[in-house]
Length: 128
Image (cartoon, rainbow, N blue to C red):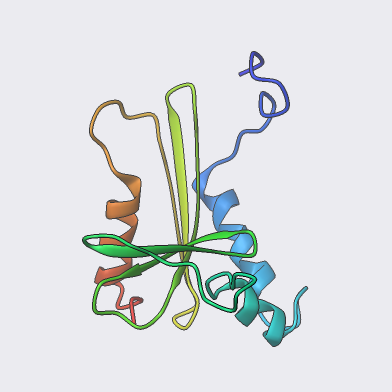
């Protein structure tokens, strides 16, 4: 992985990706107000939240996160994805449950890591 500039030397495993959630433990690095602000949809200049309403999930952005909320659920799930040259990764942070799911794959074809991460979160009772 040396061809892509800036990301060529960046490699990690799911256990390393999951460590990022420790940053969101109160008092480790951030205070509660900052964590709450990061996990809520961005507010536009006119005061409205930007939310893209999809068929199965709503999408938005928080500070540094992609936010996803399954239809019929209350809480936003903080996520971050990445892909390059056939490698894919997804991290989902279920804030109120204190659960992080990190997945990486080199699978080809119709393989949806977000769906898999949400299914794992659902099985763990982490989706509120």
